[in-house]
Each structure stands twice: as structure tokens, then as C-alpha cells.
Image (tube, rainbow, N blue to C red; front, side, top):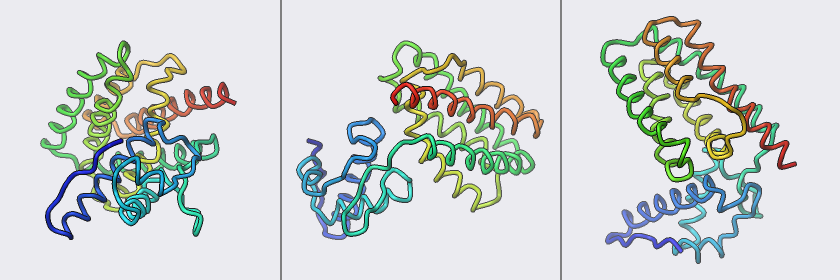
Length: 232
């Protein structure tokens, strides 16, 4: 059982416990310990995480926005199922949103934006060197650095709503990316895909960069489709 942190004052204690529960449940969903489609019974989760029912309900309600949990009204919560239909919806919408956000980011990007992309790419490249031999061990850090790289590419986009929707879609696709990373369903050089995307972006080749970004996302869908088909 994961132990909840101790706190002092009531308001800050509640916020701290909600954050703890949110991240603990999210991690277990992403790691597959809480299975797709499984019922999230508050009584069992209280014992698992050592927090109260109201804290868990608030944390689970927050996770609905990320698309990792669905509400069943009076029947409680359930881990969002994984399906080819959901994969297609997330993938197609993310391709549209990310391409437009990238296009706007390239148009407005300055020297600091370029430096941020180079730094994020360097950090991602270092972890990618270890993925082939130890994917399970570095999955969390790879996901963190991969997210930072994609955020750096879009950092100069001036549309608050585009960035908001991209963040939601990125979170909803995380489970699928982890399946692709750990399952290795198709042969692909993700490092090369990232390099090509970085270079086209920094060279301000807008159409090429957007096309590479869409293909990068599409390749993950191809791999997950194979995994879902193999799993029935």
C-alpha cells in the first residue's frame, strides 16, 4: 500500500492528500495495475492508498478531465477502457490540434524558443539511448522527457485554447504511448523521428514539420492497433 503524506493544517492537508491520491491512482492506471475498464471501488482504494473517501472522490473527479477515468453517475468511477475507437478519436484529434499549434509556434518562435527545443531534444536523446535495453525501467522518465520535448515545440503558440486541448489529448494518449513503448509492436526509430521533427521545426519548414509530426503520431497508432488485435 502507498502511504499518504502527513500534513498540519486542515485546508493544506486536504489539498496535499488530493494531490497524493491523484498522482498515485494515475500512476497505477498508466502502469496497468488498475486495468482498463475496471471498477474503481472507493472502499478498496481507501485501503490501497490510505486516504479518505472524499479525498479519493475528488481526485477521481479530477482525473475525468485527463480521460483516464469515467464517471458512472451514482455507480461511481471506472478506469477508461482502451479501444480502437477511442484510439482513433484521440489520435485523429491530436493530429489536427498539434499540427495547428506547431504551425503557430513556428511562426512566432524566437531564439529562446529554439534553445528550449534543443535542450529538450538533448535530454530526450539521452534517455532514448536506454529505451531499447530497459524500456520498463525508464518508461516514466522517457514519458516525462518526451512530454517536455513536444511542449517545447509548441511553446511559442499564442493560442491558449489550442495548448489546453493539446494537453488534454496528450494526457489521454499516454496509456497508448506506454503500450507502444513497452510492447514494441512495430519496428520504428523513434529517435530519428524526433530528430527529423526538431530539424524541420528549427529550419521553419512549416509544412514538412507538420507532416512529420502527424506521421510520428500515426506510427504510434499503427503499433497500438497491432497490439489490440493481438490481444483480441
